[in-house]
Length: 430
Ligand SMILES: *Cc1c(COP(=O)(O)O)cnc(C)c1O
Image 1 (cartoon, rainbow, N blue to C red):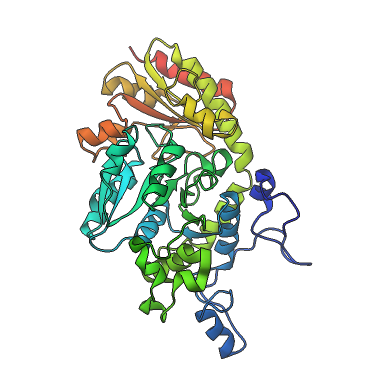
Image 2 (image 1 turned 45 degrees about the horizontal axis):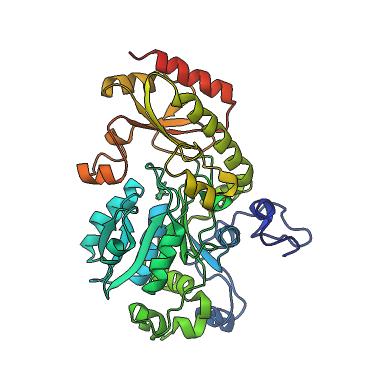
């Protein structure tokens, strides 16, 4: 189907992943079917042997989900992707694909609160130990955390809600030096603004719940394989080049070549843990992704205007937005992000205590109070009392969350309406 340039992202957003034959549905069909029919036993046997591509059972793959997987993979310059039931399950699947009991991995501490909890609490209970680092630390201090049983490095392109940008050159260098997988959560930046695989990352994670869907209608996630990592003879990744007895002796590097990671993740982790994306969520997410390129530009433009407006407002202590020239992340933004656009995420420090912050939020009319970000509608959240309440004082500091931090997810509405809404609500506080 490749009759357009591989790197023309606008066309990929709209058309990649699904090509109807003559007389078939123009829109990606929704296949609500758990299973698939074959004419002969031999056909199904070939599928089980991975000798032919095709669908067996929807816990492992499904045509609607597969079409979106192909689109997301192409958008991220991957060789394959898996749709999962949520962003967190994409992370879980990725970690379990390389870590067993007793292994460890290292992660930036400037990450999404839910991810932090998964790494710091739930994975530890499975005997998988995460060691956190401050992403501004010197290389040698980060490298000190790496040992023989370290299996991956985890960072976020644009960390939510700290709005810190990962320095790709630094982390690619560390990963290469220690022959470690570099895994990047690209949820907030989206493939429209940054392509981590092109910058040297090996695996990309998405919570498609956010900008990929963009309409707050479907929870979902993706892992995308760059197919650019050498597992063979690297003792950290023995499971990739020795027979997997849970899948009749498959040797992933031998039998799947550069798709080793994504095939192993599907036939072992997704098959056994079952955290797969539902076809209906893939159908909805695909519709959203068709307009990703338009929405992200608009989100970013509205957010930049709002950040500039609030910078000089007497009731605002500080504004954090990488698109502002005086922001400490601006150099990295210019280096890595398309057109220096910075998404719709803005954080501000409100002058005043908890009651004043609540009064501000309660008086907003267009910005709604919700536990969500990155959809077309503007919204507001106070992380310290909600999404980040389970974190310790130190972890909050590392995550860049202060008591007076308010997170704004700027939508694609008319800018003047958004501006007037914020200004009238600020007028309601002391
Ligand atoms: C929301 C989010 C996640 C988790 O995704 P879910 O789909 O809610 O499981 C992971 N990373 C980032 C950056 C997020 O914003």
